[in-house]
Amino acid sequence: EQEVSEYRKSLAIRVSGFDVPRPVKTFEDCGFAPELMRAIVKQGYEKPTTIQCQALPIVLSGRDVIGIAKTGSGKTASFVLPMIVHIMDQPELQKEEGPIGVICAPTRELAHQIFLEAKKFAKAYGIRASAVYGGMSKLDQFKELKAGCEIVVATPGRLIDMLKMKALTMTRATYLVLDEADRMFDLGFEPQIRSIVGQIRPDRQTLLFSATMPRKVEKLAREVLSDPIRVTVGEVG
Ligand code: ADP
Ligand code: MG
Image 1 (cartoon, rainbow, N blue to C red):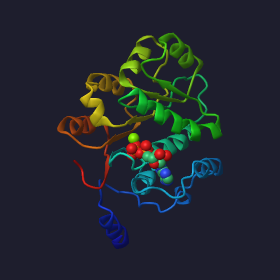
Image 2: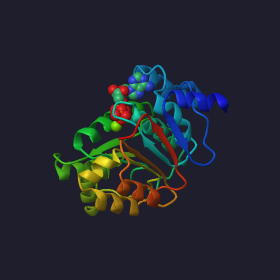
Image 3: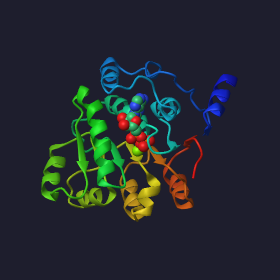
């Protein structure tokens, strides 16, 4: 414990919450299956970044997480890798459809980047990912979602449009990620985020990532996460 706390201090890491799992030092420590390990190696990821060392074991344990770290720190893999494990852990529920993992991001560029990263790890398992954002034909998107998927990476506005068109249902969704929450608020997406969260079962796992934690984002986190563990890396602006 002393070792963990000194290590965290040396890297400006703060972790708060009840029963926090110990950090990992390697991807092997995460207990990933060989297919997933191969995909990680193929990506050129040799060892987890600072935020990944802290967040991966917490997210893998099923806990809600608030992750605060600057751009470029590797936040995406800290929610995408456990999402693949979460999806593979679901019992086969043929009669249910719609995504199991739902990721919201502020812009189409960011959603697309996350979509590409998710696809790299999902491929090994035949898990289907769809990207849902403006600038693509709504009809094409509708058809793609109707065909089915396990992961949706979306901007909030377009996801709401697709839900209204009944292109997908959220009955199977149990893993929700709000990425770059502060930017989504800056762009005025708070009502859409609240609507999306309200359509996902309350026993879901919820993860919120943000570079900063303005009061409005803090309030949302209190309302939509259960007993979260907060991981902060570096100074927060
Ligand atoms: P953030 O979301 O925190 O801004 P990203 O998840 O986009 O950061 O990651 C930033 C870059 O670091 C990406 O190019 C990603 O591929 C790379 N990356 C992520 N994790 C690792 C890792 N463990 N080892 C090496 N590179 C990594
Ligand atoms: Mg990011």
